[in-house]
Length: 171
Image 1 (cartoon, helix red, strand yellow):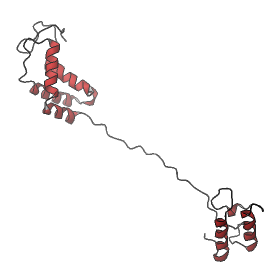
Image 2 (cartoon, helix red, strand yellow):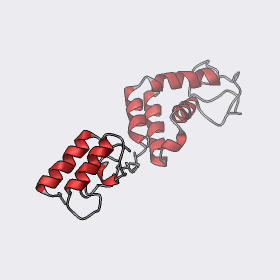
Image 3 (cartoon, helix red, strand yellow):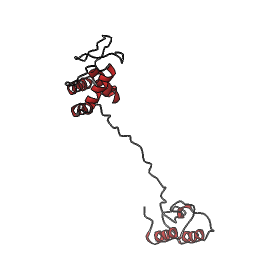
Image 4 (cartoon, helix red, strand yellow):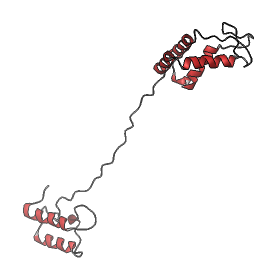
């Protein structure tokens, strides 16, 4: 690219011939670089360059330095709706990928029959008496009375055991 002090002739070329890029191409490169050149295919780059060239068809660079001409071409192109549309249409859009994460489901070990301390499938009167003692805070432990596994036996768990004694265990 030329030095900032180079000036351009009416065709957009530098008076000194040490430049390899014209201001319109520089404007295209800047616009593409702002959006990430890797986000465009070769055809997309060509489409953007064509749109920037069309947007600057009437732009004159007489007496401008290379930097001024490139700035002018970029400003013209970046305010052109067609250039903006071509940039948008040709830019790769990342495809969202779903990330599956397992949601743990709390599991509790269901007590087969609340109050059935001997695991016989029925709740007997002596097991209910044992449950009353547990509610009162004494008695021989029976994990089958602790339906919610919170370490204590409550009145509602005792009532469940009474219901199981009257109607049978739900299996």
